[in-house]
Image (tube, rainbow, N blue to C red; front, side):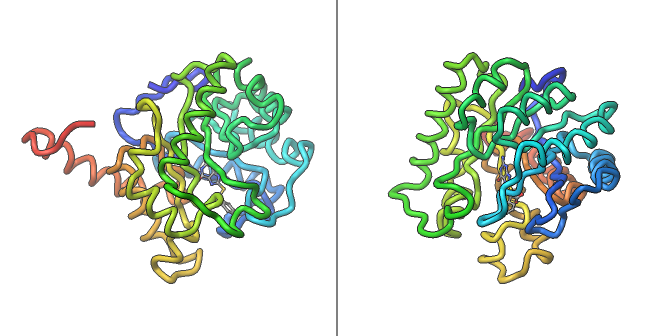
Length: 283
Ligand code: 7PM
C-alpha cells in the first residue's frame, strides 16, 4: 500500500500514471503551455482511459531547457489543480521547488514527483509536513549538462546506492516509508546503454522492497533502439512499460494511458493463469 494524501493506493497490480505537461516546450509534443482548460480535459481523458494517478508538470526538465521560476510554475499549476479538485484520482505534481510543493499540496495535490529526490534546501521539510506520497528519482548531474558524459562503474549499483541515501534522508526527515516510491530516472544522466541495463535489472534498483516507478514513455532510449522519432514511439513505449511491469515496477509513468492499460491487462490476464498453475513465482 502507498499512502498518498487522502488516498491509500494498492500496489497489487501496476498503476498507470498519466503525464499532463503544462510546459510550453515539451519534447514529446504534448506541451499544453498556459492552456489550463486543455490540461484539465487531458487529465480527465486520461482518467477515463484508466489512469490511476495524474502527473502534472510545469517545469521543463528537458536537457538545456529554460528553467521555470516558482511563480511561473504556480501560475500554470494552480488553475489546473483548482479545476481538478473534484477529480477521482490522486494528482502528482512534478517539481523540485519547496514553495511549489507546499502550494500544490495546499491546493489538493496528493503526491510530489521530484527529479532531484528532495535535494533542494527545504524540500524534505515541505514533504514531511504533509501526508503526500513522494517519488525520489535518480539523476546524475543537472538537466542542462547531464547528458554530456554520463559515466558509471556499475550503473545499477550506483543508482540503487543513491536511492538508498535519499530514502534514508527522507525517513530521517520524518517521511514514512509507506509514502515513498523510487525511480531509476531513465534518461537523466544516462546513455542508451545505461538505460537498457537499468531496465534489464530494474528489480535490483530499488532498496528494501520499496515500490519502483518507471518512466520511459517516448524517451530517446527508445529512439536509439527503434530509430524512430519521438512521435512514433508508441509501440516501443508500451513494450518498455510492460517489460518494467514484468520486472516489478509498480507505477508506470506514460503519455499513452489507454494503450498501456490494455497491454497491462493482457499481461495480468496471462500472469493470473501461470500463477494459478504455479509456473511463476509471485513477487
Ligand atoms: C525532456 C527530457 C523532457 C525528459 C521531458 C523529460 C521522469 C519524470 C520526467 C521520469 C519521474 C519526460 C521527461 N521523466 N519523473 N519526469 N520519472 N519520476 O519524458 O522518468 O516526461 S520528464
